[in-house]
Length: 139
Image (cartoon, helix red, strand yellow):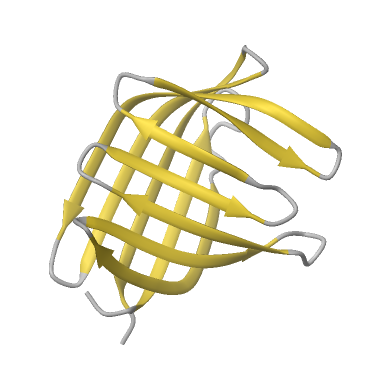
């Protein structure tokens, strides 16, 4: 895998917007450190504010760290619920992430990640979610 990567993220909240995935295609940077895969990329919100993202993929966990106007640190572990705060300009919300499945496939110039989880906000179930991430060498 090269340092420069193309990232395709598709997320679906099945209880909220059925059959309307949220998709993001962007470029980023990849590196491997201490047996964990790191993917760094930026996202631009509707208000043109940049959010810095770090995707850390380990043998049993996936972590997503967002820094910007909407910050969070979500941890996905199969069979576990992890709690985190989701910071917005209007205040923080307590998110619960209960992961039911993580699928990881790694090839020479491409990696694919799929995570199925339930999302709760302030202890109220909000949605069953699925995220698909494809990372491939750019060039």
